[in-house]
Length: 138
Image (cartoon, rainbow, N blue to C red; front, side):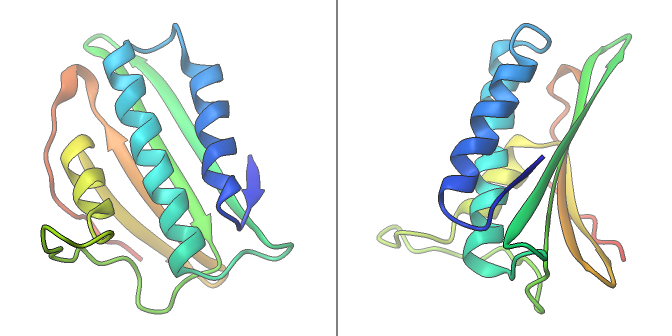
């Protein structure tokens, strides 16, 4: 799906994801997916250029495995030049925690780049196998 490169884009993406995956994944996993997608879209809107047409592309893939559902979220924007970076936020800071949330809730996350932009992705392995690391490619 495409959403506006605007604050409303995260809300639209969250609602669509929740509508499509409710009943297909456990409620706790869905809550993590919604939180991470909101962070990824919010970061794209705040820190990156839009794709042509002033949009951000949002996608997810659900695979059913013997161990449970596996989900990948992907948010593609027009690139930010520097790319996403985890920051250390002070207790009083109002921002700077988004990628820590992504890292803590997902099994792994990373960035792919091509000539048109960047895609930041997060994967959720079955049975909550969280591994907070960054795998950058591209």
